[in-house]
Image 1: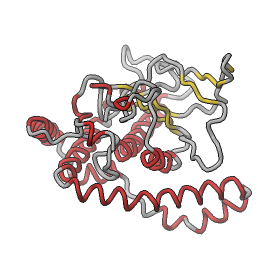
Image 2: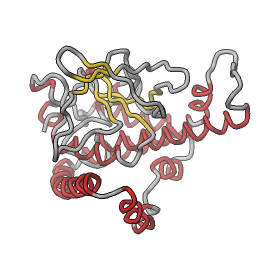
Image 3: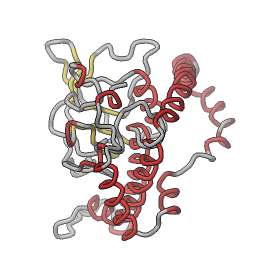
Length: 298
């Protein structure tokens, strides 16, 4: 799947899009023209299968201060872009159809949208980040999560720069912005993450039956867990929720940092770039992709 920038098109959010029992996407937005399997079936605007929506919603809950935008990319497949969620209250405009219309500026100097992992016109999204029957490595869900983790590294580097030069000063590096400099500083980590995703995609895509079994077996568990979380959130006071979260804090500390895992396994930038090109070429030439509709639209 492709990860890229948000366009100037407005996001249309139906007024009654949070009916009981249907988890909201929280900080994930989808371009109406992105092909997530639905466009091949003639469904517009783009809509996720219930399984994919549940997985993405579960991931989004772990990153409350970040926005993820799923945009139309190479071959209409998804691409991603991330930004720090502004602390301001989001402005909306009610339309004549009684919908909430929000407009997001991708070039906002204070909270810019940053493409990560997969870029515009990059065929790598035939291999990773595609919504499919695979719930683990090469899927859209896993790529979105990897992008969130990488964006955290970018924000960490950006805050470090701002702490040194002063947050209230007017910053001019003679061309590059603070975000661009921070992105350049984490490029090696980004290459490691891309290689991890491609290596994982290669391992899973050559064993499709096993991948399908993994996906189907996880779906009921995820749905049950999300339904329980949603009910807890809507029926339990904040104070009581804090007590419950404190009890589970030890388990949360065991979560894996995808960026740290990638850098540990693939620390060499030059070697990663060479291997990424090698994997992408081999898989494209041998048809090991999620290009076929029967794979892309399960």
